Image 1 (cartoon, rainbow, N blue to C red):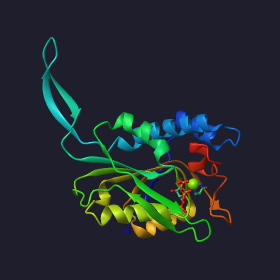
Image 2: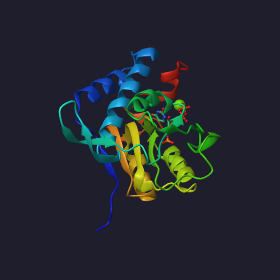
Image 3: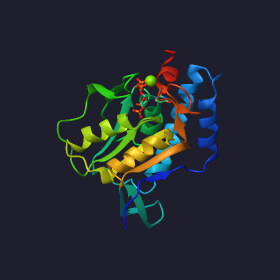
Length: 217
Ligand SMILES: O=P(O)(O)OC[C@H]1O[C@H](OP(=O)(O)OP(=O)(O)O)[C@H](O)[C@@H]1O
Ligand SMILES: O=c1cc[nH]c(=O)[nH]1
Ligand SMILES: [Mg+2]
């Protein structure tokens, strides 16, 4: 059996609500940023369900011994926001993963060729292959930026089986390209949109997520 990219679109009213707010062209930048924070929070919540390491222990309540399951703080964990737009998801993700290191990766698409280039790389030179890595980028359009990020992580030793990708709108062309690159990856997104326009923007999408989050339209 050949493997296939797993793309989860959680059915949650809060995710639908904040996606609607983010898509609306009349949403001002400050509210757009709040919507992204909330989407970062709830998509991370969904993605962490079968991903966070736990340990079973026995503790003492005030009354008796009791079995409990706690988060195991030992295995390394990292969040990689893809700047700029991925930064808008970071606050929400960090509230759920306070022990994770944050490695910033700045990528920008050339507006004509749609090729991504890296202008900031705060990844460590080597990454422990046991590191769970949450990659944040709200927009998966052609998929070029995400693949550049995946390559940078994998060449430093990270294990893609421990990655979770968080996006807000994922377009079919990006999903096809990521599936070709590595069909074992797992993506959590608020929505899958069908296509891109001639400028490489997702339609209907939500516009330029970086510009909307940081008020640079
Ligand atoms: O799938 P792709 O075709 O690569 O497009 C998606 C990328 O484009 C946007 O970044 P942009 O280059 O606009 O930078 P910004 O986040 O700083 O606005 C977006 O935030 C993604 O990183
Ligand atoms: O629709 C798109 C595509 C790429 N980047 C964005 O911010 N929006
Ligand atoms: Mg942008």
